[in-house]
Amino acid sequence: MDWNLLITQLMNGLQLGLLLFLLASGLTLIFGIMDFINLSHGSFYMVGAYFCGTIVAKTGSFVLGILFGLVGVFIVGALVEWFIARKLYRSDHLDHVLVTFGLILIFDTLVHMIWGASGMAIPLPDVLNGQVSIGTLVLPTYRLLIIAAGLGVAAFLYVLVTRTRLGMLIRAGASNRTMVEALGVNINRLFLIVFAIGASMAGLAGMLIAPITEASIGMGNDIIIIAFVVVIVGGIGSVKGAFYAGLIIGLIDTLSRSYLDDVLALSIPIEYAETAAPAISAMMVYILMAVVLAFRPQGLFPPAGAR
Amino acid sequence: MQLLSTRRGLFYTALLVFLAIAPWVFQWIDQPFYLDLLSRALILGIAAVSLNLILGYGGMVSLGHAAYIGIGAYCVGIPAYYDFYSGWLHIGLALSVSAVFALITGAICLRTKGVYFIMITMAFSQMVYYTFLSLEEYGADDGLVIYLRSEFPTWLSMDGAFSLYYWILGVLLLSLYFVHRLIHARFGRVIVGAKFNELRLQSLGVNTYRYRLTCYVISAMICSLAGVLLGNFTSFISPEMMGWTRSGELIFMVIMGGVSTVLGPLLGTISFVLLEEWLAAITVYWHLIFGVLLVVLVLYGKGGLDGLLGLMDRGKKSS
Image (tube, rainbow over all chains, first blue to last red; front, side, top):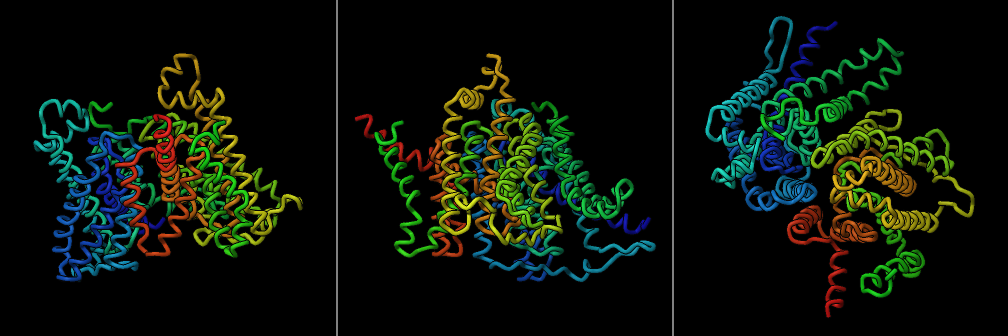
């Protein structure tokens, strides 16, 4: 067995898992607290990447790109909450699906109008472009940075949610929104902040991945579905759940893509295994979700006191 | 039937008459492209009618219905790849594969409610999407070309734009009639009742789960027919036709036309396809207008286009 390959794949899985966590943490809070399905959460991911790319192209600084990108996406998120989402918290889920589907069309077209149809590459500073070698193992520096950033944000969110007053309100809102409202909390402001923070997290994920894949129109539309799977598997409204489920799903997806054909070949002829493996590995994540929904519909780590 | 006694009824009667003679009209004004457009609209119309059965009447918001269009289309494409062109084979295969898939996934999906139902239907359709995306043998993301249309006895042949159009119209009218009958039968009352108050029906001793599952399977089977026709119509199929955004578009069409009315979804699809064609000719940014339209429709306009037609009648009745 090739141990270096295994470790590289584990790192890739970890990286995907943390990106999924960044997307899913906001999604799960918006879902859990406002009971709002935001299909257009992936648009924040895309918009973040384009904001960051534009600033990097203007200033040449990746750090500035991330900072301004975060602020930009925060504002976009706040605007969406203020003008659209806020009007819909009391309507049914079908309306959420329709409106946020409309928002995807709007965001995709706006990006097309402003930045054009072709993608936008984001150059990395030389410091991040190199590789780090540990023994015989060679890892790209930037991938390590993504993992570090993901873990850093996870720690930040953990402190925010468990140690601050805002976090207390967020947890209370996820468990019982009506009660929080009845206790006199300015629920509108809380919703606005949660929505905008969630949007910035998604934007950050987009900024981090863009130097590898480049920013493109509709880049959020595929990954957002997996982020929803993370939210459901982790338990709606649970940031902790989003973290563990993100890692589990990131690892399952990456590892099954690279190793499933070998595993299958143990029991069925190799040529069948090689045909079946890609199809099955693409489905693994959804199979996991179906199993969780069938046996533990509240998710693996539901927030305390959630219905 | 009050088809001729209200303005809405008159409008729909006129629409159906027009659909019946449309190919001749388009030939007369020498615009064969319009027939293409209308054929596509009606195929999507079949899918929308099937989605409306579960979404509008049953309150089951499926965000994965495009998967059944894909299953239907690949039930034409894959046999054709091995030179099996029998139309009955294609239709039989599409109906049975979609029924089995809907039975298995529906049995799981219908244990959930609300948000979970939306997400899990989407997850299953993504499973289908990625499965076809990874089948190298059948073209993967490059898709599959279907060289010949499904073969039927001469009097039922699909060859030629006219006969295909009448095939589509025929399947559409049958589905409309079938859904209409179904909804006005005891079965339909249970489905609609379960949407509003499932507990009450259960306490009356009705096994709502079985009814809803049956409804889900029927809807999937009708939708797979749309897939069979789409495969024949475009003669090119690819996994792209069942991505989740396609399912979103289908919901859009149903809502635009008006949910829980038999003909509303048809009106929605025709308007959707015409609007798409018209806007795309004006600007490349037509998606923006669609998006705004969708947001405005939900925030401010309830009942869809069919509701607008109803408004004309309300004015008349109250006077």
